[in-house]
Image (tube, rainbow, N blue to C red):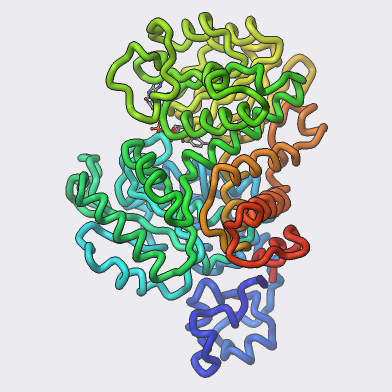
Length: 551
Ligand code: NAD
């Protein structure tokens, strides 16, 4: 797909109703601001509506960066970028694509967490669709208010936003941010992206009493009424946007697992918190094993946290171990979970269903450090959203047990990270194979500069979405996430590994996403899940469908 141009408007099917003049300047999908050429100014009736000098998009991007870098507060930068997104989408995405290292932490984690917490205060223009529980029986009608054909919907009910809990309708920052990354990282056209918040209320009392809160001021609707509402939305989305891919985002445990199971085979859908996280973490482990030379089947992995991320990752690791020859029972013995009550063991009654598979026959253990001493894991993966839980003692113990301990502190935002990169390296004598959820600067230790990279879903989900759209996937399977993990790990270079990086450099993200998309499409074709014939060159086919924001 080409960059947004005057033909990209909603009315483009009918040349007589092509937007002109101020309608062009006020449509962010069409607007190029001072970047409109002389010819375009004549054709679109823009003469006099713009200052006379024509700027190149490069100059416009420099101006954006100049102003952005003058701001010191990340939230102010978020607001400025949001305003640009609302004015000129191509310029916004060009800045994102060309400076992804600098911009991703602003439009997504960690800043997006703060932006959701302050969503009501910083609110300027709506983006996406807010569908309230009071809209029951009218959801299809409401979706028809969206002016474009959605190819991907990212939907949340705002109940578990990052590690920040119930933020209700303020959680909309997450689908918006994710879809920005779909476009920036994988070139999915912004017009195909629809962020949706299902507003069923919030149990966050402070929010309900906040004068700036944008959502329904009522407690969450649960039970059958909730399920019927989600069902209506899922059916309506498919009716209004046939073939749409629906990504579940930041639903709380008690709904996330159920909804994934209910819809994964019925609707082209996935849960990024469970499945996307799993693929990115498994890729990181594959990279770490390239450094240590050890086999996956010899690993023992201890998770801090037993929620969506932990069990999602454990499930995929299990499948990978089984694919490499272990029985399911043997593979299960390699994955252990610690939750807020301690080690997940069979003796504990009332365990949530998603933890049961990992409940081992083992005495109770109350804390992480004791669990490490008893189990002697090769890797610890932090996904409990409790900051500082990889203490110096935990890290030292891992370094005592392992020559090169695998330490993944994946919780977001930064305040919830289990440890910083500096702590991980310092307390393991620089030997940790480290990945983080939030970004950390390089660390100089023992004469080496180690460059930690984010084990962030953004390496995976954009490519999954692009691949699904490119081949009209009918569903998204576990095999697809496995192929994405292998592909991502394969793209990590030897020089990445030498500097301690377990993921490719972020500026390569579009190449990474295209490769992952091709892997997804190939898997879909292999399993008869593609809605179109297989092209002779899948990678080229995928690349041809990528939106380029440069004009
Ligand atoms: P979740 O709510 O499903 O799970 C959290 C788990 O942590 C629960 O099992 C809970 O019992 C456990 N827990 C809470 N307090 C604990 C404590 N003191 N000790 C041990 N366990 C405790 O959330 P989730 O979706 O699994 O996400 C968890 C964290 O991982 C969040 O911070 C999220 O942002 C992060 N995450 C990061 C990525 C990434 O790409 N890096 C991807 C997904 C999730």
